[in-house]
Each structure stands twice: as C-alpha cells, then as structure tokens.
Image (cartoon, rainbow, N blue to C red; front, side, top):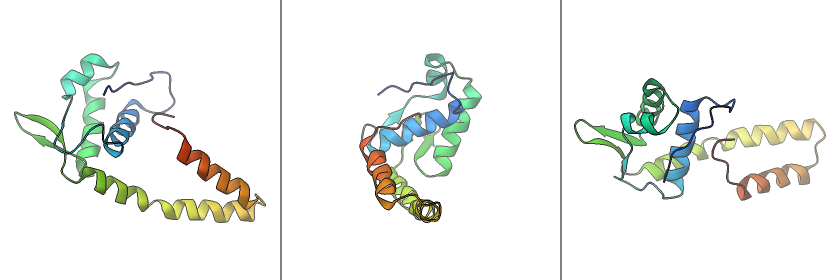
Length: 127
C-alpha cells in the first residue's frame, strides 16, 4: 500500500490522500486497527506539506475512519469500512436526483444506466 499524489492534478492533494485512504479502507488494503503512515513519514515520501496531510488526516478522523493514539500513531478505526459504506450509501440520493435531471434533459435511461455500470467497473482513486 502506497499513497501517491499527482501534483499536476486539479484535485487538491489533501483530497487525493482522503480518496486513496477511502479506497484502501473499502478494498480491505487497510483493515481495522492497521497503522497508517505518520504525517511526517507521508510528507517525506510525497510532494506534500505536512499541514496538507494533517488536513486530510483530520477529515478522516472527524468522519471516524481513523483514530490517533498519542505516542503510537494513526490507525484505521474499528468499523471504518462499515462507517464509510454507510456514508457513501447516503449519497444515493445524489444519484437519484442526477437521474431525474437526466430524464428532464432528455437523456435516455439506457445511457444513465450505462454510466452507473461504467462507474461500478472502473477504479477511480484520484480522478
């Protein structure tokens, strides 16, 4: 497991780190109670400012996906995969609204279903 960032991407570096952490959690690459790189370790291996990494870690911690243990490091929290799945499930309303707008715009249902299938079949990490 290796975090990577694309400095040329229009996606902010902290969002790239969050996206990768979510991907690693959902796929089981980072399981419960597994240690993740410290802010210092990550900032030395990535072209990223430690404050940027801290911002990503703070977001992940606020959402209950990681936990910081003083003197020990940062770990994937117990139940992180389930918690993240529930957070993502709540976004289904966005898909429903987009489908409604597609219908109003005259986009055929087959095309919308194709887009959902396409999303399910691709590996989006930092796009």
